[in-house]
Picture 1: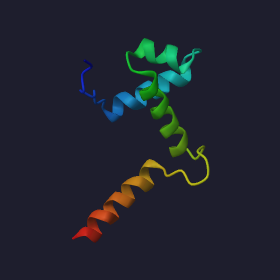
Picture 2 (picture 1 turned 30 degrees about the horizontal axis):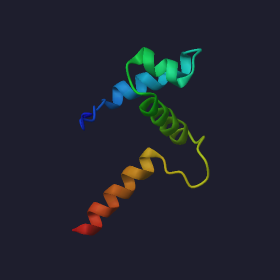
Picture 3 (picture 1 turned 180 degrees about the vertical axis):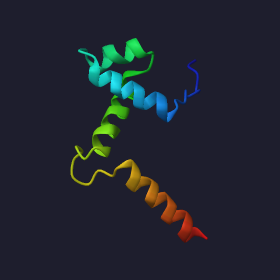
Picture 4 (picture 1 turned 90 degrees about the vertical axis):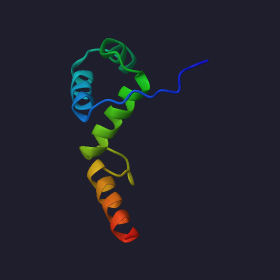
Length: 78
């Protein structure tokens, strides 16, 4: 039976992995294998980076916007 453990990566690691993924002349799957992460993780980090740089689709929320929404929810919950 598979483990239910989810590995957590630091934001610094994710940023570095995304930068390396952009610099590789490989697919996301190949880059992920080289980095030792799942292709799904690397793909989601690259997608988040593109959204944060304003390259996402209409209605996609940046990380900064998401943090502001969390802050407002906490504030309103008090």
